[in-house]
Picture 1 (cartoon, rainbow over the protein chains, first blue to last red):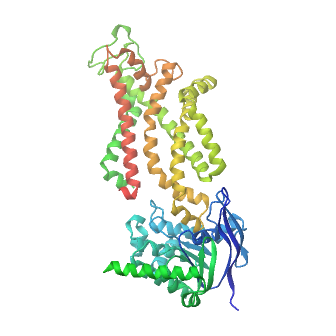
Picture 2: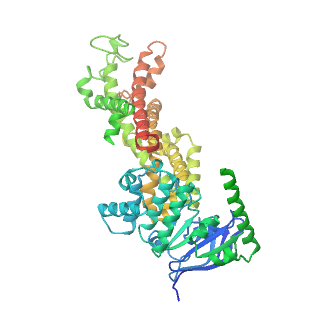
Picture 3: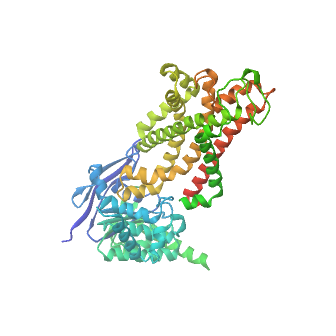
Length: 268
Length: 272
């Protein structure tokens, strides 16, 4: 039997002020090395779920309940210091917009090395070498130049790969990718998908939040379909794509196919 | 960094002006042709001459010598005051804005209370209770002006802390201190430098306001603000007595502003 990496039980996210529930008692689990895709339309609660797992929701605005057992430890109940040591090292995230996910006034190299130094007791030179290797591993060949660059000097695709390098540097057990391909062009998307394939091959678990069925189909072993904060359907990628049971999943797939056809039509 | 400063004409112009004022302050005893406090009632409002290159004032004192010595007092007050103001308001505002929630609300309310009183009123109250003297003048200026700086710092920090890269830093496991020192401050500092540089003129003029109320330096001290303030009484008869200290204040302020703006351009990569 495969080992459980993440087990989410009755996760719910509620707006404190209005009392509105945005994520409603959802439960799912992930095994080690598995790739789980969360699909849904905008406002379905998929990003909220990812952020809740990483405790990125402002506690003054949101109230999070339920359990999220990561390697047996409840992420939602861990002490802040303990949780911080997990972030980056065991749990990582790839943000939606690479252009805004790097500090604009700090060189890429420094941003990578600072993250390494925050977790590992290594010197500056060692951190620099590791960061350089991480950039080369994601096919950024001019790694030295990229290390010296500011974010605005790089393209969206390069920045997204730099972010993947940043996420991978500390060899996390789980990476949450929130719409990681939605802000880049088609060529960069393909390159990023290739990087995700490599991450999968390394045995790192991926939780992919996307509204793009193509991305989910290319990467996910399991799919979770969300609507209005609830799970509509979940199962293996094959079962969801070939025999969707829920009407909403069918509608979503039809809409996705329609969008794809429209995109192709516009390109002619 | 130094190479970038050398290559930036605006930075060099600003630095040259600051250096000129600093050198004047340092070398005042060597450069001054006369004793700045030597009163000569028989020679008031003297015209420009070899002995008095910029003439004399209403007490017959050498204007040039007073201006040269004045650099010491004006910069001696403006420099430490600005440094204290910048450090105090940056530290307090950044901490409160970053923590947010109730802490920030209380801090903001405190700022509003301070802002409700005119700075001069706060300063006069403080000097009245602390007594005169250069240290007390600095303390009173810091207390009367810090809130204006603090509000600006708070605005910049609030804008910055909600940006996506800060979330990315948290995801990467950076501590709050690492985020503040490594990311928020370097990103807000360029704008702050420009704003802080404008404080030099305000401080010099505030000190002159104190002199006018009798709270500043002792009467007769050759300080630009006091000279400017005193000369305003003779605006129509002897306008140059107003122009000289005014020019000194303008040059100092312009020097700091030019250098501050250039420094912002130098350390802001997207604007370089």
